[in-house]
Length: 136
Image (cartoon, rainbow, N blue to C red; front, side, top):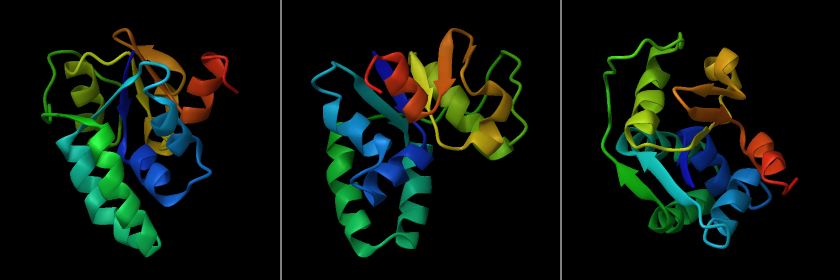
């Protein structure tokens, strides 16, 4: 299963060892999940990691080894119901990378898409994803 991790999930995984985002990254190999993110999300994470304690930046560097990076996809020939323009590249990149699910903690911007499928790809939170997998 290919999981696309939004920068909010990446920041959570780097910033808290008790987060569900970190759990997903920790058990991904065991569950044969391919963790994917876009360079766009990597850059956004790099810009915001300084808002966390210094050990988060160290953890972020280590976590990158567990990720596959996909090129940014900025346009789509399909209509998208997403009002936050900053998150359109995230959704489009996840679709272009043929991911099964996009995991995000940004329920404000992804709002109406949370726990729905967009062109066959589930958009959900780490918590909802783990519960659906029978792990929560």
